[in-house]
Length: 475
Image (cartoon, rainbow, N blue to C red):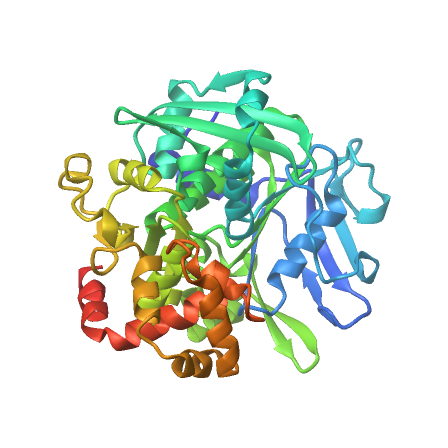
């Protein structure tokens, strides 16, 4: 039984380091090829972590291990990876039933029932999950055919600890075998402070945590040997919540004997592990080298690797154009935030009722289009998360009005195109409603719509520095 109380977590961490595990990854070696050339990763039992700069190969290791061990019980389909599985050699330590001793087992020789791999990679999967459930037109029909269940009071206490929330109800539907890209698709509905909403209306961090709790519950309920691979689990989470997530990982290892391998940049994740549990992957000429022990910890801190993915907060907007304008306004600050497209004004309003403005220094802002200013005063009340894009127009109208002040020559110069092409494209788009103007314009030029919108959003920002500064100060 899960017991997520602070007094128990020290016991869980101690047990996770001392207990025996039925199976764990011992060696990951790349024998040939150019991807991860020379990699020779040796892991211990229990919870292990890999740290390293972006692009050094952490994701490739995680996906390759998951692909080679996954079976029909795994939560995800096979992951695209650059590494040919034939080039990787993976050795597991597996406990013998008769003697209790561990033996080396090549992953290619294990039976699919011997061990199940699970994957939690919120930065990659959660946006895809949200896009998928929001696009399904027959999802209600699917849910009607699937039995739902609610977490009991004890599980509500545990999920509220993990998410730092106050859910009065969490309902879950498990859709299995219906979608090739999502072999096991959970769908959630929650009630919090009198507001009921479902997966479609959740933010990235919230759905990531609920999904992880669901995954823990699933692993704990099945009698099997399991390994969970976690790629940057800190994604979308403030420091306090990262620490709570790691405490929950300690329960999974200590109480259920689940081996864990984490790739991370976060010092909050690494802070729970001793020096023997951390491996630093670096480039060494044309090959990869692993540093472990205290040297790895010192190097991680020295390089400041944790700063790469530590975000200041999450910003939600209504649509794609709003996101383009918001990032243009932020400029070089854009990389300091995570982003979410809510999909509508109504979905943004729901977030205002749920999210806190600041949790342990991690900000949340619902950034509405300028044309909604004053529209929802009664619903928003004194919410501290609400912000508005500049002026009183929708962002696409704002940029279109600016675009129309530019000559054909200025537009041509900005897009590096011949002036006559701009004249033709503008003529073709005239009369289109402002939501559709740039789409019509883009059909007449050999450029992507998003690129065109980005170019002129940035030019608008340069021409309206005072409005940009005012927004940044209010953020």
